[in-house]
Image 1: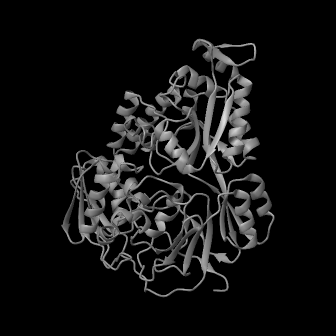
Image 2 (image 1 turned 180 degrees about the vertical axis):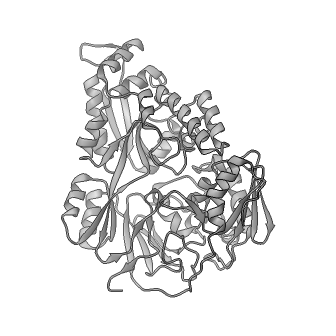
Image 3 (image 1 turned 90 degrees about the horizontal axis):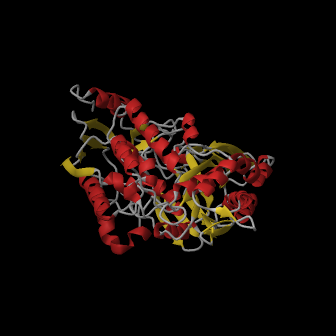
Length: 534
């Protein structure tokens, strides 16, 4: 299905780049087979709180959702959006509608057929109860979802929405089985049913989650050679919170795959011939966030001062042993609107400026060297998760702030507790990360409408929000990039975040595993995996 020739120029460009590619992609099927046996095991630091893709984000679920649920479109590692459950699409002449033609012969894990009604049900449910999802704001941009026939769905928007493909490619937009949701009732999060290459097998709380092969699967990502059923029987996510224990499990053979971000561990494993190690540049940003609603961090001069006290080079070299690149902007290099030159609008390492700004904010240094104002000392609680290497980073930051004269207490909680604390505003400073596939990440994580949701730092600036709304509906790539660059200038000056670094992780795989690839957002592609001896 090709785009209409009456499309406006900017929409036509987008459609030819995306829909044209989609329309030329044939419907590929592979004969169902039982595949081989065996189990592929990877460790996970946090257990999912729910496997409902429309619920609040949690790190454990983020690992598993792509294997249980398919989306209408998928993003490849080269950044292109290509068909998955939709075999083609067409953008309307006014840019306000997108019609998706569904792939034929797709079935949910419960045996029910994928059809237009299931897609409509999925997104109507999302609009009604998915407020905690990272993509909730973008889903609400959908004015209506209509089944044109059994295999065609129309998404309608009040205005052209440039994020439609990036939104629909996220695992949170996985298509649900209406009959399974009805049967599960309030227990959807423990009984997920999608169309993915795996079904939920066994979930032992505190131990791990086992996924079992979907033998009927034959509509896999075009990025894989094998688009049929996977070639092994089970995919196990074993709960191992401690990094040292994860390493021991890998070395003993209890775990086949491990993502390593602890430098000494990676150095050890790169010397071990029993493993294949690949360093992976992730589309993520690690940042230091300030609670913009809590005094004194509601004062931009205080936020700027603390930002000027951060030596990012020291963090990368000392805490990460070089496993990362210093970041200076809120967007990562893989996203439209990134421009390294924008870093000049932010705060580089300059202790003298830090002290000057604190003085301007009405603080003075006491005899003990600690800054104070009105008899109240400037101290902070730095909140982060137990995920490595956060402890090492937090310790370096603590030392840097101490040198400035600001005592900092470190608090480490599991990821779920951190997310709860931040939505409640129960923190001063936050060491956190994000990864996203579109520059609308600025809206998701810093938009005023997302406060107490995905905006964890309570930042609000009307001028920024206006720009982000404009960027949401701009289809011309050059103009859209310019909008996000203007927004970043304002954000950097306001300093709700101090961008720290772009992470590099080591993908460590046991030699018995062959064919494992890394896809978009650092996700594991297992379609072509074979296990030696199976």
